[in-house]
Amino acid sequence: MPEPDLRTRIKEMLVKNLMLQTTADQIGDDLPLFGPGGLGLDSIDALELVVSMEKTFGVGVPNSEVASTALRSVNTIHDYIVEKQQGAGG
Image 1 (cartoon, rainbow, N blue to C red):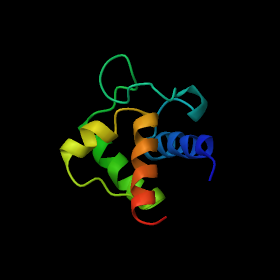
Image 2: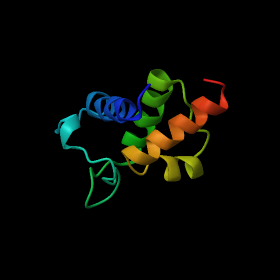
Image 3: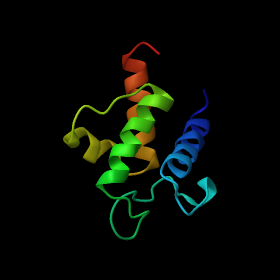
């Protein structure tokens, strides 16, 4: 699958599953997902995001340390998914 496609799917997943008041097109690849100056997601959103990633991409997030690195932005989620899918032989 082409990489830009995966980023688009990640953004659509974010908007749909977290019921964001924005569109996928408005989410920058490097926009911080958590905290001020970004989408402003919180810990509940993080939990939703982890569940959504497992359902949508078949990629789990084992703990909060991994989550804090992998879930920073669309780009970091993208890289994490690609890495995990390649590691799983997919």
